[in-house]
Length: 280
Ligand code: A3P
Image (cartoon, rainbow, N blue to C red):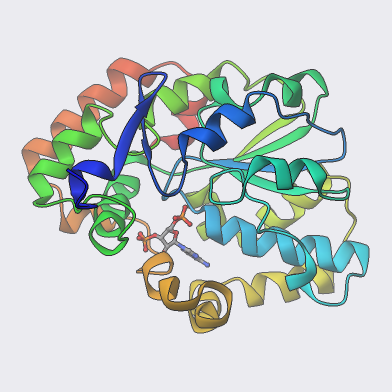
């Protein structure tokens, strides 16, 4: 105790594990009272589903559509994940670009009441788990994953920071018909980034020319974002931009683990709209 060791890196809030450093209890408490604004631009993702990729894309969309000269002027630092105190978010000028890994039930109620547009990024659970495993081993804010098998068990039982992948997916399932909520998957972005950029822009009511869409897509490839990651993410650049592929799970899952994941996925998400989107 008091050593800052792995056992102190996570704590439980409303039954869910959070990072002591990235989501301090004081911030989560403060968030409960946070007031949404109709023109907030809200991005939500379960960890490792491509949050930083979409942040990069959205900053470029906002910059192109609003004529802001430098996309770094767009305050992505106002991130509810997170290290920024919610009070600072409260004081920020509109329109605010907000991001969070919170479960949909823990997003302040005011965002739903105000009908703030919420973009949700999701990814197939196997690649999400692989990405989370590597992230845990390279992010000092999280307990190291130890072995793959240990992390596999923790992920399957939801005993990881920000909670269970399946609980998050089922939470969004309840909002799939809400016109203010849109889900875009990592796999969709990989397949046709320009199309995803068009979808996201029109969801937020931004209009972009074809040339702007193309420019944003070119600047948002894995290679381009990794190359600029030292300036966008400092020494965490290589951690957030690791491999950037669909299907890396095949290099990690044993056949037995893959079967078990398929079973759990089918049991929990069969017949759901979100499950159909996340099918891999
Ligand atoms: P991998 O670990 O599989 O490489 P998050 O930002 O939510 O933490 O997600 C991180 C994952 O998104 C990492 O996955 C990272 O490489 C991937 N990623 C980030 N930018 C990307 C891009 N431009 N294209 C494809 N994948 C990207």
